[in-house]
Length: 166
Image (tube, rainbow, N blue to C red; front, side, top):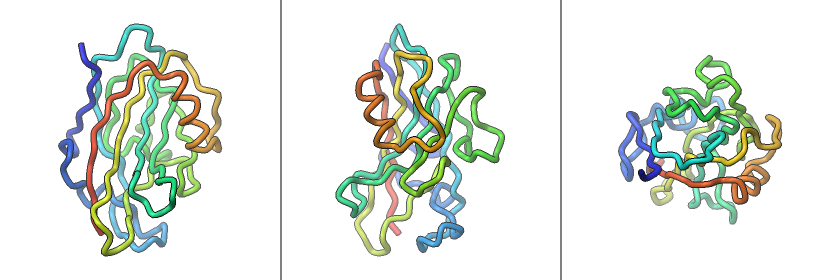
C-alpha cells in the first residue's frame, strides 16, 4: 500500500481557499481565515510510531523558504486532522500532538500570504510517518530543527500541494 495524503479542503495542485490564508491579525497584508486545511492519510509503513505534519512554501523570497505549519508527535492511531487543527486554541489538536514554532514565530498554523503581485506560491503539506513515538521538541523548537530530526527519523512522506497568489 502506498502512503498517501488527501484533503477535503483542496485538491492537489488547486488554489487554497481564502479560509486557509493568513489573517489580518498578523499584519502581513492578507485577510484570510487562517484555518489549517483538513488532511487525511493512509498507507503508513510498518514501524510507524507517530506522525508529523508540515507546511512549507519553497517560493518565499527568503533564501530558505518559509515554514507555515509544524505539528509533531501525532499518535499512530490518528489518520486525519480536522479543519483548523493547527489552531492551538481550537480544541482540535490530537491528544499528545505538539505544535512547534513556524517562521511566523508562533506554535500554530500560519496561512499563506506571499508578497502582493508575486507569482503563485506552492504550499507543500507533508505528512511524515515517523519511526519514533516522540521527537525531541518543545513548542519553541524551530522548524529547521524539526526538519533535521525528520530527515533521519521519517520512514515515509506523503505530500499534497496547494497554490496561493495574493
